[in-house]
Length: 400
Image 1 (cartoon, rainbow, N blue to C red):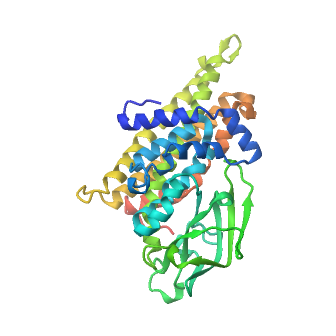
Image 2: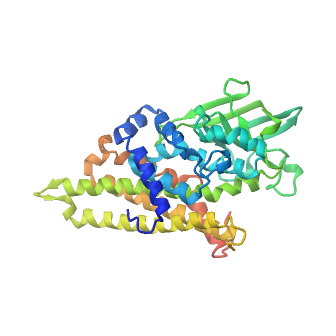
Image 3: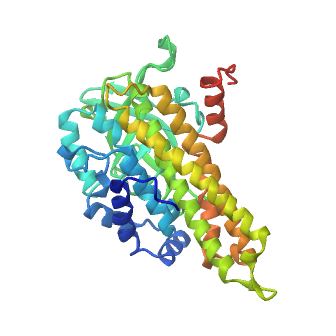
């Protein structure tokens, strides 16, 4: 990876995170992948040095840095060989805390964020539902007011890290759809106590293809009681609040995809230099060299767009910047799309360059290939990004 376009500050983060990740070799991640065991040691190491609060305010114990720096951290983690499991172990701590930081009260920030930054609490994000998928406005989980709190009924799916989470950022309806003029109204954001010992909360783990070290779950709420002070922001403004974090998450996913692609490419190039067949390194063959060279260029192009999008996001916080949410959205979605596609190409070609050994777990590239489907699918599919660009940029008729 070329680092000439990075600022000294980003390079410092790359160096610091690389040093931490060097304690967790490929064998560590392969073992956790096989046993589906959470990377507690990595999470603790990052918490110990304050990295879980990289994009949270200094007043709560965070570093007060931006999404650009957080994207570099996530890229460095996946590029170390950790893959998506390493990223998903802390991904929610970085972006799912943003609504709490921006829209929570001083009391909420003081009560919640320091414990997350210190690693005392892991959190999960409850938005996606099995019956609505990407149609966030179609979610049906309800939170109904009661004395001193709310009662939640409904279900969520693909909730990452729920097994070990102490808190959940939850998006739920607080007003039935039939009572609204617009579906985007009537949703509220909560930061809830996620206590699996309390009645009304059930988890079902999903067996999945990649990133096995970090669990994914279905979550079922059956008259689950949450406290009055768990509401984040104003009632009914949850959709606006959740939109605030979506562009940031796209930047983070783009960085994670880049790291995965670079890691796969590095292993492929090393193997192509060292593997000798017919008396010569296989890297001499253009059928091996050219696809890897092409994958490198695709990653480099996606890298430039990713950090452009992250900078736009950070700079847009200045009200005098003139940067619109539209500009940030186009850049962030485009970056996520291109980075995911470049990573997939690099991972697939890494496996093929290894020949039969690419199918063997000891070379790790098969794990990267399984992992790299995540940024293509989540948090929004490739097709929905193409729909967004077609409609919002090219002004084509909406297709859905």
